[in-house]
Length: 116
Image 1: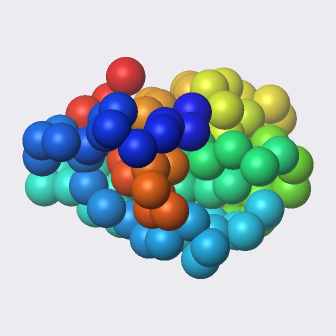
Image 2: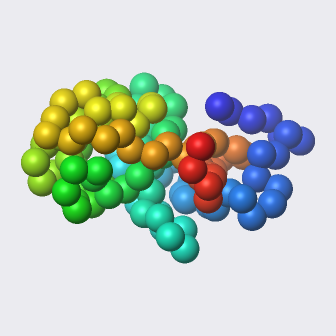
Image 3: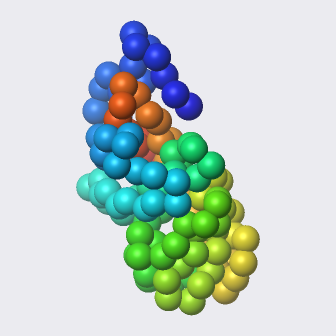
C-alpha cells in the first residue's frame, strides 16, 4: 500500500529498508534477511510483496527462481507460489510460504521484520 508523506509506516525498527522503489521493477526479485528469516521481495502488477525466501518443499533460495505475474517459481523443483499470499499454486510443494508486509514509502521499499 503506498503511503503519503506524514503517514510513515516505518517509524520504528519493525520494518527494514530493502531498496529504492526504482530498483525493483515488475517481475524482479530481491532478498533480505532478518536475524532468523530469509525473505524474498518481488514486484507484481505494480505492487510490492514479501514472502519466505526459502521454498517450503526443499531448501532452495527463491530469489534464484522466477516471478511471472504473481507466480513465484522455485528454481529447484519448480513449485509455484502466489507471491501475494504465499499459497501453493502448483506442487510439489504442499505448504504455503509465510508472508511479510511490504510497503513503499517516500521512494523506498520496506519490509516488516515479523511474519503476518
